Length: 72
Image (cartoon, rainbow, N blue to C red; front, side):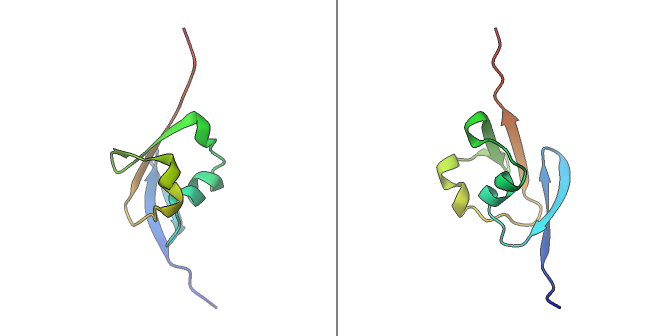
């Protein structure tokens, strides 16, 4: 049986275990987050959403996802 390597990351302060070599886009898709309604920060840097498919996540990465909310 194959052993799948896992890495630990944090998403909005919660610890998660994901497959090694998983991209940021795959994580966003897995959690069903609508890209057009969020801002994404990776290790305290804002991410260009056009590049998320090329960003491989690594051990101890910290992702913060902020949803836009309208108001007055």
